[in-house]
Image (tube, rainbow, N blue to C red; front, side):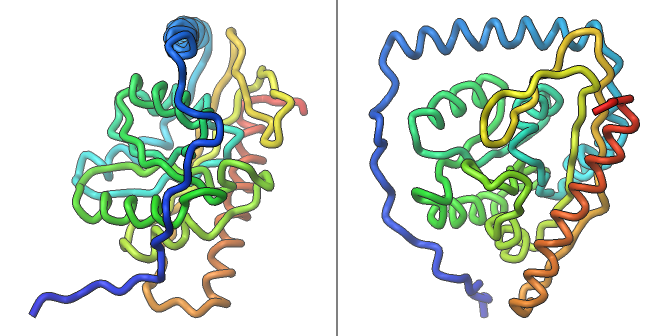
Length: 243
């Protein structure tokens, strides 16, 4: 008899886009912006020392046909998109107009996208992501643990539920650029500068049992937060950051 997987109630009606779809002018501007982004990041790559050796385990799991959840902070979305290029990535992006822009950029980088956010249709998107990982092998699900709206550095339960329901391990990832700009956004998005030292660090895989008690789930959530903070401190030191 086929085993039926039980899940928490993840279904919810999709919401409409509050700002409407992108116009032709916006799409053109996005294409131009993406071209400039690629050119700029190429300059960063050619002029910087980049240490991503610790990500080899992540890509090795994918080459071996094993799925992984890469748990990053929203601050790292730009630098991670740069470092993750050329790999099989699936990401969760909000259904807002800003999400439309991010989706187009992600797909230009060769990434797969599942649409949804905690404030809109996050439960349904989570269910779609579960189905995606259940049907695929060798995929890295790149998720921002603090969501699309924060609070910054606070791990939300969606990443944990995905790991629990699919049996996929969470690997915390933190990246730091010694020289960077921080945008005036809630997450302080990091923009690496040329002539830099960039370091990416990975923590040990975190596995979650399917029958975790709520208290144990909270412990796992705090463990992800703590590991990301540890990696942040270590990455800053290895990158030679002064602040």
